[in-house]
Structure formats: structure tokens, C-alpha cells
Image (cartoon, rainbow over all chains, first blue to last red; front, side, top):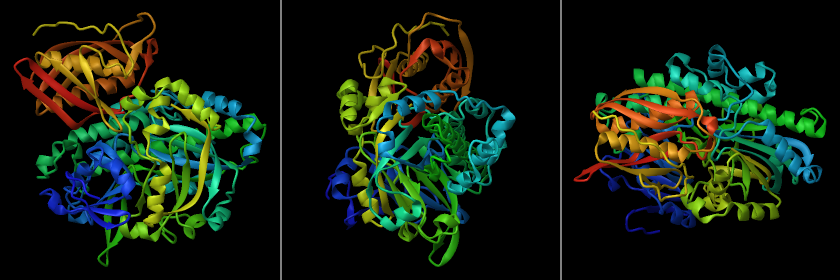
Length: 485
Length: 155
């Protein structure tokens, strides 16, 4: 595909290279996973320029990677992956994680079928809307003291489970068991503490959501059997992050790391790519603080799942256990992780930035729980509220090619302002209703901003990661009840 | 330094782009604003007004006033501009307040000292959440008429 402004080299049908010669200062090439159709959307904004800019980061290995849901972000594009070699001065960048640290998604199954809920759609939607706090700056019923907040930062989901808001099995089905090790609450500012205190157990606003979904396609029957998933089965998806705490951690460290550029003689073309060597005092402090926010986000999604289970329990007058509401998996899609990879025959510790990208470890990976050791890691890809969401599994090819990473969602194609201008909320709600989708949002604005037309078709995005071998389709869901912040 | 006050007269929702003191900038995932000012004081004040105008619209009558002090330092005007806006966002989240009035007591390229007045967030209809002001595509241009800034927010 030719574009006068952008010299992309075709590697194969799903991979495109931005050569190092594109911009002096690029340490590695850029590699974009997309097909020709998605590339047309990608060319519409300056995301590829950002992929090239990320290639400037000291210590970056192999390539600055872009997933098919890539779109223009700030500093890093959304849908970007970059791994730096820690021992050779590799850096960590708060911009490579984003403001919403450990924004992520979890999926739980039920033993209900669509027939069981089809006459209760309104009741379920309203119950979830009322029982799960959502909206801008929303405050949860779960109020914590500063001391407890520190415990959340260290224990993540485990804190919630300890409070009776879940069971041990939930932890096994969460990336990092719901608590990444090495969190340093002392690296978190007073301001960040304050900003996080009242928001645990809240969904948040914007693209965050809670959806009741129904499985409408099975791609791999064996995997579906293993996961206990079947056609017509009701599932629930929760998308949320670390709320104000994460924003403040990102802001604090983006601010201080701007000064690291000079201190460590780092040349990057965009201040939002401010970074510091992972092994520097600044790098270590950010990593410790980021982990606190990540753990807070896992605790948050655990609380949200608890509230969801309770709401279902009330509606069906049964315990969540007898409704079979088990967690399938929980993944982070805005995070930096220290992971080991074999680079040219030598095992090295890398700092893998996933900003709008999901970990996708293949079968046999030691980080996976016994339950998923044979299948590969479940990968949860939410789509927009009018189309579909997916469950996939990670692959060895992802580990080999993309530092165990795949896409994270549909990816925006239309700006919020453009969506607001061109889409009428009433018409949209009617259209969704005719497809059997009921939407409830705290802000009317959110409904149009998050309209399906504002997103790429998630089916096309998932086709690319499946065909490129970065993950494998298991099943697809369609939304029935949508709760938006 | 004068202590002029600029008050918001109306708080429209995001799509309205006919406000006098700012224009919206489109961006795929986020949005931004373009603001002007005859000097840094007016520019910073207008940017803060515009940002909170995007966030919320007043719906209930005046309640108690909440005040905050802002003291920020930076290496240059651009960094100071981002720090100013982010400090306001952060204080707004913690104090659960929407700021509508800004008094800048001192401003240079590297220092700002100001007070912000606002009212409790529950007196407003919240239109959008802004997580942070970013350096992405940040521009502050000087011309004969004064200053113009462009900033993209993470929303």
C-alpha cells in the first residue's frame, strides 16, 4: 500500500515495516500489524509517526510495534508495544503506559442462556446501572482509609478477596494473580493517594463499561469445551482501570521524567515520550508507583465483579456460585512489565510497554496458571457497544514476534467531537434497541461518543491478529445490556 | 500585576464550538482546545476557563465557594502551561470542585502563583472527564496580537 507521506514496506499480508531510514534517530524499525483495509484508517491520523517516534527510545529491541487497533494517542500511539533491554540502559516511559494505568478488561461466565435473560434485559440493565457506581468522578460504596489504600496497592485483587469480595479462584484467573510484585507505596504521591481514596469499586467514564453479553460464534470447539463456553451462553465483561490514582501517578512521573531526558542524555522527538533508564532511581520509582496503580486497578475490577455478581444474585434469587459466575480471565492493556525473553539465544530481562495492547502468552508459558497452561492465556478483546467482543488465546508466535502481545480492542476511528456532531443519541439508541441491545449511561454525551461508528470494526481487527498468528479466536460475544460511565 | 477576573457566562457541552474564548481541536481518541490571550496571564486564565467549560456546565444555583492556591514552577512556558492545567485537574478531582474563576498573582515563563475559585461539583452537570493535559502537539505561539496555545487532553 502506498502513501506519499509514509513509506511503508510490505512484509506480508498482515505486517508492514517503517524502515529506520524514515527518521534519523530511529534505533529499530517500526512494524505495523494490519491488513490493507485497516491501513486506510490508520493513515488517517498520525499514529504511524508515533510508531516511528517510539523507535527512538534507548534500549528498544527488535521493533516499535503497532497492533491493528492502533490509533493516534499522545507520545505512544494507542495499540503500541515497545520492549527495552534493561541491562543495556533500556528505558521506561510513563507515556508508554498511559494515564489510565492497568486499564483492562475481565470476562466472567454464567450458566445462564439467552432465553433465561431475554425477558429480564431491562431489569438487569437497571440493576447493574444502580448497583455498580459509574460516571465521571464516581465514588464507590467501598470507602477506604489511607492505610487500606496502601494495602490495596500491595495486594491488588487479593485485598478485595480478603474482604470477602470474591474467592481465591478469582486470583488465579487474573494476570499477575491480581497483584504485581514490587509495588512501592512510598513512590506514590500524597496527591495520588487522595485522588484514589474514594474511587475504588467504580467503573469510571468514557469508554469504560460493563456489558452482559451472549456468545454468538464458536471458533474453536475444543477450547470452548475446555473453558466451559457454548453458543447462547450469557457472559459478562467489565472494562475499567485505576481511575484518578493512575492518572496522578502518570502525571507526577511524566512531569519529573521530562527532566530525565537531559540528565540521561536521551533524545526523543516528543516530550510525552519522557523516560528514564529502568535501572535509574527515577525509573525504579516510577515502576514501583505504576505497580501500585496497577494493583489498585485489579482490586477495582474485582470489586466491580463482586457488585455484578451480587446484582445477578438478587435478580435471579440465587447465589452467584449457583449462577456459575466464574471469572474466565482478567487482562491489563495499559501497563509496563518486566518479562524475560530469549534474544539471540540469551535470556534477557526486558521492560515491555503495552499501551493499548494485551499480553498474549502461548501454551506452556510459565507465567500461566495450571488451568491455562495447555490452552494458552485467555485474551479478552472488547469491541464497541453495537458489535462484538472476543475471547482469544495467546500463542507462541506472539511470544516470539511481539513480546507476547496482541491487540486490545476495536480502536477509535472517529474523534469524540466528530461522533458527537454526526450522531443523534435517540436514533442511535433506537438502532441499538432494534438489535436487542439496551444501553444505560450516566452521561448522554457518552452514548454518542462511544457509538459503534466511532470505532473500527472489531471483527476486522481480530481477523488480523488471528491471521497474523498473534492470538487465536476462541469465541465471539454480542452485547445485550450495556452500562456506560 | 493586575488581578482581572474572567467569569464564565455559560457552560456548553463539548460539541458547541462557538465560544469566544476557545475553539475545539479534533483528535482521534481525545480532543483539545485552541485558546488565545494578550499575555501569558490571560492565556493561562482562558485555557483554564476553557478546560473546565469542556468538563462541566453549571446547573444549580451558586453554593459555597471553594478556593485553591496554585504554585507551580517549570523550565519553560510550555511546561508551566501543562503543569498549571494538570494541577487544576488534580485539585478539582480531590476537592470535588469545578473551578470557574482564576486570579493570577504572579506569572513568568517559569513560575505561576494563582488562586482558583470554584463550586462543588454537584452543582454542575459533568459533560466529560479529562484525565490530563498532554504535551502531545502542544504549541504556544507568540504574535503581534498576543499568544495562542493548542493543547490536547487525554479523555
